[in-house]
Length: 378
Image 1 (cartoon, rainbow, N blue to C red):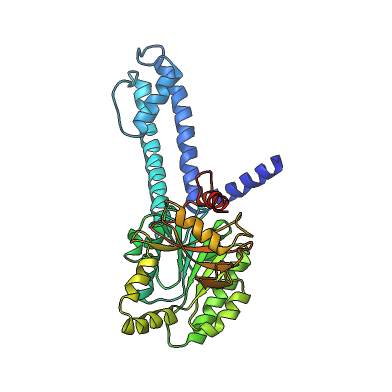
Image 2 (cartoon, rainbow, N blue to C red):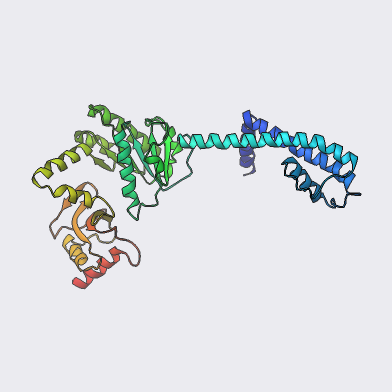
């Protein structure tokens, strides 16, 4: 244990011996020596004749007030030697103190600049990482809407969001104005920006594809990013945008938990609105928390063995107005309006439509109420 402390201290000391750190140490050392040496002389000359100097604390107070040019006037030298010695002390200590303030100020400004440019290591956890593989303006607006949607859901409203991108030097508007949003700059296929983002402690990652004319290259970049993320954190849940849905098996094989073809989604909604113009607003509402009834999935842990019909009937009797519309079978197949006799198995998720995400666990959680209602209906 002592060896590790010594080793860490030795590393810090070596870093402090270079550049501005070395100069800072010199200034601090000179100030300390100056205060101690001058203080001994000042106390020796003044304590016996100066009624303001009674203790060691008095000369320390005087030294600090003189060095910082505050000069309250409550303590001052009255002997010739005390006054003469104060002149070099004031000049030396003031110069060194100004140097310390200048170096520390420069370091703070440099740290802030590096933070704005996404070049510092983040000390956060339980966050979401959003990787922007593109450089177009539209993607910035997409990211802003993703963050807004996360903020409208009580489960994710307080999760920090880290944006990783290589297309800009700092977060542009409107992303820079969003609270609890951080930025890490760097090559998206390298490890460095993810290590800065503390990916080992992240909850989930979202990969946004490029929007070029070559879907093959776009998906290749997204797959490389996916593999890098999974290499650094094998347990993280990853959602990826796919430019060509034919590449979905590749994403699945690389460990992607959910693959979304945004281009196909946009085109199908547009085509559907030609015949059914009311469908597009309904879909947007179901995907937008806080704007009416919204789609949610609920991870069940105590309902395996029950039928979909019994769960749906129990929710109809519940006062929270939760409508069960489907079932996700292990995250691999989503079935809307399944047969009532469909058995719910381990790792299945309920797909529900409700005004806000239900609180699922706990004494007052929805899962416990469903189990109670099922037993009452039997």
